[in-house]
Amino acid sequence: MSSLISSILPYHPFKALYVLAVAVFTAIRLPIWLLSLIPRFLRQHQSYTLRQAFMIRLVSVVSHHSCQIRDHPSWSLKPGAEKERFERITPSNKDIYQGVLNDPEIKPAEVGGTWYPTVYGPGDAKRKTVILHFHGGAFIVGDGRKKDLGYGAHLLTSHTDAWVFGLTYRLSSNAGGRFPAALQDAVTAYQYLLDRGIPASSIVISGDSAGANMAIAFLRYITDNPDILPKPRAALLWCAWVNPGGSMQPRSCSSNRNYKTDFLCDAFAEWGVRAYAPDKIDPASRYVSPRDHPFRCDVPMWVQFGELEILADDIVKFAEGMRGIEGNEVDVHEDKGVPHDIFLLGNVLGFGEKAERMAGAMGVWLKGKI
Image (cartoon, rainbow, N blue to C red; front, side, top):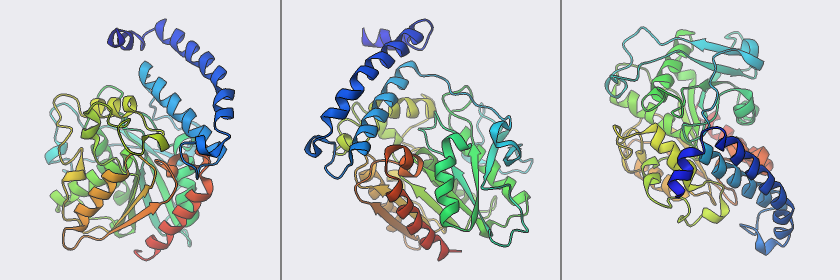
């Protein structure tokens, strides 16, 4: 019965009825949640403020119900509110899509990206570095525009002397967006920056959650194909989703020791990996789930995670594996008392102060690399 209900919810009028029912039911429960979280000992973690505890619960509920209807997010290459800061990028005509990127069905396609805080200008006396950022969202939601990446871009530009280019890559919740589409788009964006005259030594790769997974895949790709693209200066990995294959298992999130203190849910993670790596793609492969596949990498890595997030143990295992290879430079930064991806949602969840401190530590680290 539950599978039947799930199969019809994405369609009208069932979707509209479900959304209405959830909205009404959630509105009724909001004051109950708020009152129940006033005693500190009843919160997900005793270090959480009332706002943090309430918002984590709310985001978790919204995430769960959004997975039931599985809306296909709008994906556009129109400039929109970003205007001249948004740029469209066509695939390179150079032979840079080789090996795992040479897919018989998924081909490189036009994508876009948003500049922060302004359009790149090579004559800027202050900013000398470009951070190419891949947003999170389990490969199925999100965007590189201000509505999604604005806060994360603020953290990057406030604590570094860098421009940020937030990539609007293809989502696997839309047709033609499965692996390796997002990785093709990452390579397209990197080549675009090189074609703009930006040296690889001035480019930093960055990603949060699923975007950090993309960043790792990108680093592996240029390592596997050293003659195709030059290596970037450094990589910033925020709460990297390093084991999507594990999300295929029942209760992958709800059985985790940090499930109570985080907002991630089983349905969201499973939807993401099944869309990104459908039947023809092995979800445990090294390009999709790098946790158990360490590799030699000349690019210094900043690996950040939250103490109370579901992905914490996976990230630690990935970092230890990478550190175990001679020549790799992997710096791990654990943020105490925070859930998943405050880089993206710190302002929403009430962790803005800790997100600023986290970004400040990154800025000090990156300054030593550039």
